[in-house]
Structure formats: structure tokens, C-alpha cells
Length: 393
Ligand SMILES: *Cc1c(COP(=O)(O)O)cnc(C)c1O
Image (cartoon, rainbow, N blue to C red):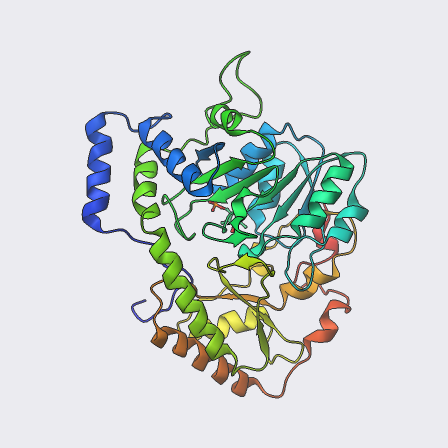
């Protein structure tokens, strides 16, 4: 493992700082159950976002689940057909019905036209993902949600440190959710948060994360999704390093973009104008004439001790997401989307190794197979991709 370039290396604060934070928690005698460290962490996250309505919870997944619970969602929730499986699972756990619609080919975020076509009287919310940190089409989705009179929720799991039109991306939408998992830019080892923007939800989230206990009794939407005092205390320490991590990632991205110019069969994932910096991930898209598909590329990189992930295919594919219509873009992208290693302590030498590996893989596989035809071709049972018929229950 020593020479492996992993996909993400968590931000690791200095051991003495962690030890001090942990000791403070144990000395206080309060180790969980909505204690002072959780409240302090919430205040720090709020202050940095300019928000006064934020509650933390156990994970980015439970953040989505609790947000759905707080909004009392029980009908159809429109979700992207190509997204991290947590999105679909969290909606189901909340007692609502996820309905998958296609994504846009350029930014890989919910296609507003597909959303519009999928709205039914049973639609109770739109849940869009800022895919790999790239903002969804906020203007169009806001308009569609307003016309349908349903809340607009953003899964902004990876979006700490990303701005849009001069504000944190997390401040958009009626509600936005964040992951504080170790693989995200800032983290509490495991954790998540819900931000109320257009709608106030933080007090509901605090109740729902603790079995929904309160007022008239325990609510059905409740669960145990608390954050412990230890996690919150470590979250504060990591948060103090997040600005430095952002700076490092901006530099890493520059090295990548310079180097990837020389690989002509792939394209760096597009980022919406007015947004940045893109410090969430390093997605690339294989061009139609690429010599390998996403799964093969990940395997070949792995043989060279470089970890990359094809997030929209294989292991990550939702097994039973109901679809509102055809999803040609999601099928196509499944074979073409790969995230390269991306974290702040990557060096120029690491990036050079990744570029060299890509160059070698390209040379090794000539002549090219043509992926362009894959979207239109019938999906065979063993094929990679989302699988049309399998996408239905
Ligand atoms: C990481 C992630 C999640 C899940 O977050 P956890 O904290 O791991 O539960 C959900 N959605 C997206 C887009 C993610 O990247």
C-alpha cells in the first residue's frame, strides 16, 4: 500500500490537537446526546456558511433522510438517475418514493427538462445533487419547484468550500445537506449536516435525529442519527484546517489540468460558470474515442497502484430505482465517468504518475473501441452501465 495513490486521504489534524480535543470531551463527562461540543460545532459551521439554521447528524446519508422527514415527504421525490446510492436510499428510508430522472451530459446534474416531464400530482419534492461539487441548474430547478409548489432540496454532500455567485453553494435551495465523512474536504470522521435556507428545519432535525422525541410524542420520521461529542470535537479541529486544504486542492487541480491536456481521449469534468473553486473531486469523462471504458480504466489504474472510481456504474449502481422515463445520458455517462485521486497532500510527482499511467494505458489499448454507440445499443445483462430494465423494481 505504501506506493499506492489512494482516491482520497482524509485531512488528518495533528495528533496533539486531536488528543486535546478528545481529553476535553472525556473530562467534561458528556460524550454524546446533544452536548456542548455538538452545539459549538454547529455554530462554527453556521458562522462560516452565514446561516443561522443548521443542525449536524450522524452522516450525509442521514442528513438527507432527516431533511426528507422534516419536510414530511411521503410522495414521489425526484432524484437524479445517476447519483451516489445514498441519495436514493435516504429517500426510501424516510418513507418517500424516489423517482429517477436523467442528468445533463455536460454538468452531470439533474436535467431540468426531464424533471419537468416527471412532475406528477404525487410529486412532493425535487432532490438535486451538486454532482462532484458542480452546482445543479439552480435557476431552472428553482423555477420548476416553485411552479409545482414543492420544496427544492440539494444534496451538497461534497460542497464545503465551494462558492456560487459570491455565496457558499450550501446556502442555496430550501434545504441543503452536507456530508462530514472522512473522505470529504472537511469532516468529523463520520457526520453530516442539514442547512435550512428557504425553509427553517434545524430544530426539526435536532428532534428527528434523537428518535423524534418531543412535544406530542416520538415522531415516525425519527431515528438515532446523532453526532457524538467526540465526533463534533474532532470536526472542530479539522474545520480549522479546511481553508488550508482548499488552497492545497486548488494547486492539485492546476497540476492535473496542466497534465491532462496531453491525454487526448478524456476531458476534465465541466464546472458551471460562476462557481468555484472546484475543490470537491477530480472527475474526468472519457471521450467517444477513448481506448477503454470507465470500469476498465479503473482496473488498469489500480494495477499501477492508482485508485480511481467509476461512481455511476458497477458496485455503485442503485439496484431498484424507479425511473420516470428514459435515461440515455445516465447510461452513457456510467461508462465514461471516472474520478481520479484528489486530496490536498497530493504532490506534483503523484500527479505526474497518474498522467503517465493514463498515457501508457492509452498507448497500450490502441486501436480505440468506440463508446459513442453504447448509449443507443441494447443493454445486455452482463454489460456495465445502469441497465435500463434493471433500473425498475
Ligand atoms: C458522500 C456522499 C453522500 C453520503 O455521505 P455519508 O456521510 O457518507 O453518508 C451522499 N451524497 C453524495 C453526493 C456524497 O458524495
